[in-house]
Length: 224
Image 1: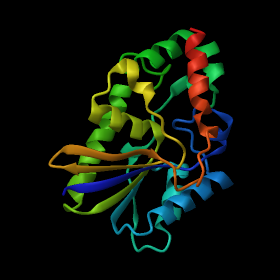
Image 2: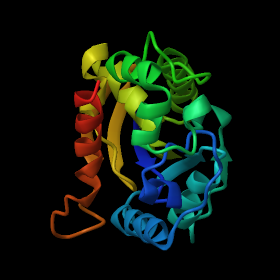
Image 3: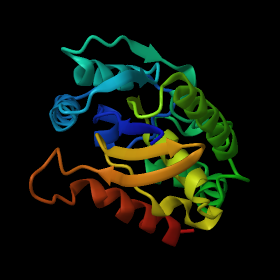
């Protein structure tokens, strides 16, 4: 059946809560972020993981440590799973980026393949390194195994965009909430995606608080 990947976005950080672009900034989880990771651990408690991989960034490692607590697995750190480098935008809020780097930001929102963040990493490069790393992870695990990969919203987004061949003008249509779980089986190189951005494990009743990012992106693009 191929290798089943559980692509898990790390839990909330202060930067997430404040609406700041973090990228290569190394930030820790908040109490809410640790709760989200605990919820993911509970939800996945029946899964027998063969391996657990993580980005080298603190927020991802801490999430991975919570999920792997009580298991015998060593967390395998992979540099290629780190978040996209946002260059000059890191540490800034959406509105601040739109004001200080307006033209670059609007170009990136419309087509990140051709227009990278100011002095940052292109979406094309992110897709390349993320896709290469996932192929390595799949090759390291036997068919029928389940693998946890704790990484970042941008990395997961790039993988799904690549697998589904989503066009550049629609790449922002995908959302990744904090602590979200995505499930995909890679069988002979083909991705079978059964879950995208699942967060039902965190709150039993729908909560649209994290969907505010949609309103922010919509407002920013209208101001262009």
